[in-house]
Image 1 (cartoon, helix red, strand yellow):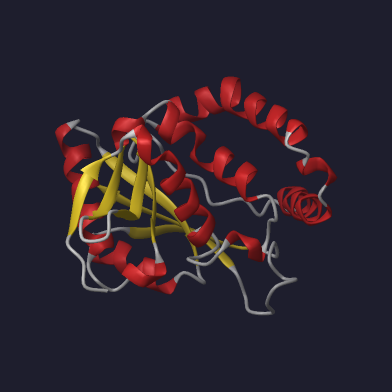
Image 2 (tube, rainbow, N blue to C red):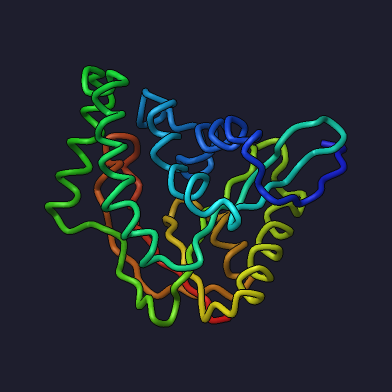
Length: 219
């Protein structure tokens, strides 16, 4: 796609654009319809902290040629703060939305949540992170038609510069073995694998082995 892209600070007028990009890309770069049917609920929960409580750590790729958002990088400079706010405010809000939105009555959503519970009981969570060394974290997604154009690298550079300005010691992220293109980007920026764990959460979608991967980088 022939476009003029600039990296901008998040602005709340783009909240729906960010959430729709999440919906189209959050399943290892593919649409969340692969595993969850309530798009509004999932996007609300996934972006709640970043867009409401730490919007200054989110940056957008804006396509000036077509007047649209092409991708985002959402981050958090202090993951302990993220856990505190999500545990005390975010999760209760999400639970309320889960019932009020009618998600509880959608079979596909309930089936996915049941698989999440089973996965948790099997201790298949992402490998833990030493937050003293890597206190920040990030999520990055780019619309399919804008991939392989350097947008991800530009957003990553902007976010890492931002963390340097805030004197953050390190940053981590979670990904999976399926997301090979993203892993290549992370390695390009000096992220190294610090943990890997097999998961059976998506066995119903594909027989391929699936590994949860944690990567980190000192700043």
